[in-house]
Image (cartoon, rainbow, N blue to C red; front, side, top):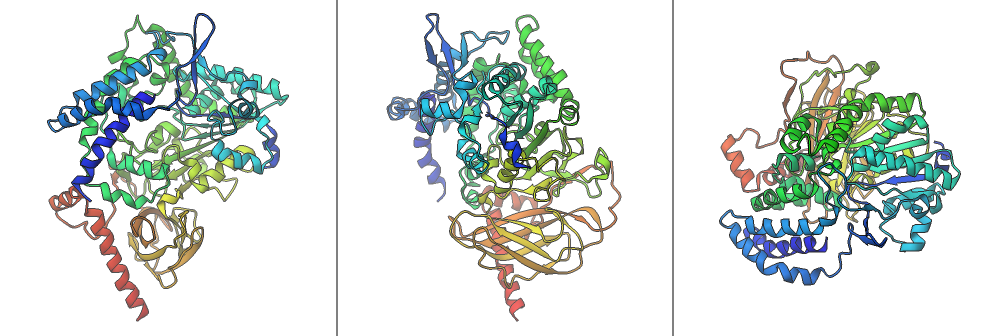
Length: 639
């Protein structure tokens, strides 16, 4: 691992100067043991040698990186020079060879079985108990998954470390194999603790494992609450990239992803919009085949293959004879487990008493390759079973959701997600602009997870008004969020009289609202008292004008603000759905339309728009025009 990291750091050290030069319940639920099922590759794997000794082969020590950087700096420098001629072969070869060397112990045979005797480091309940982990490996052990957030949660409900367990699995294997291991692990935990049931919290690949476990073993009724965070139920973009061998990095989306993960100001991304990082795509394209040689026979990779391309990719890569066992297992996962998630998970809830909650992110593009509405890594459709409009499009005004759901409206405020087709339509919560793995950094999502996991107060999306089905992410990178004062988050009706804006930043500076523009409704906001919103506080901004008497129609609201971060100005665009009268007639021949963000430059010729975007100044100009408009508007209000 440290060699690959050294290669990456060496690339960064050499490339960065070049880039810079281009431009400047009840609490009773908490009594149950808590099983934590982490994301992909989080489990530490060891190889058991013939003499019985064990050697760690995954999650290696990353020490000594500095020396390795020096080892690679010269050949990488040559490779970077060759990038000038659009040749990434040298860099791709260096990185590809290191990946192969790093993973030589965890390759699989063509039938999907492990070439060597590999097992998770921690297997039994006793070994995996947090109290014992801390004694054996230290208070801050990485084997206590998500302890940086779960510590506060479990302390609030007096859950001792002796009642929390980290599940490790051989993540190379398919989800069915991992689910079987989870079944045995839960039995071990119940015997170890003397309890009758467990609570489960999972993330990403862990969500796929838990959903598979519930599908196969839910009838055992050994789970009380199960929370699946950004689960990879039906696939992931990285598998799409690998199997199609088409990975084109979305640099701007990746930067958003980093901003949210590191809790940086969202508005720094415009500094990089004009950067040309095409060379990264050349490198990635060059290492896809070496990576496939390592992981191509991992069952988990095939379980991550999105259903819509599964048969095509299977025919492309797998041999009916040589890969027969791998195909058999993967076919079962796709055709029996995935295809029946809705039936099986609903049965777990209705017949077996398992309370399942899914938390998903929406309205972001994948960081590479697959162009889908997603949380940056997992498409929203794969994560939830929902029907989604194509990326950069939304459902047309008047859109009629696919399933009636008892008359409950299940279309997101941005009109991009139809949750009526979700595996669990009444138990899935959507956060717009929530990036993969950042759910604990969103205060609303974190609180939802806590209540759904450790209490019985969140039975569905209607059981607790504090947790609506749809909401905008309140990650502090956004700086602010906005909701109308009388309608559910994301919706607008004639009952509303003001827009409530909250400062979600965790910095010490206050926010001042400079301008609020509306596309789709004749609303004018009074910003007289909208300044100086301290972190964690809200301000109610009244508006004048009649709310259009129409429903199932989208409007956009752009909030321009001043702050005190790296860049003192920022904007956030919110999509709201009008729910205030008869819906327009839905044109089934045109189910989606482009997502429109009308702004002061919308009427410019297409060529000029493209030029400004290529220069990286399009959004910056829009923001400054909105600032100017806001200043003029404030002057008129004072007069």
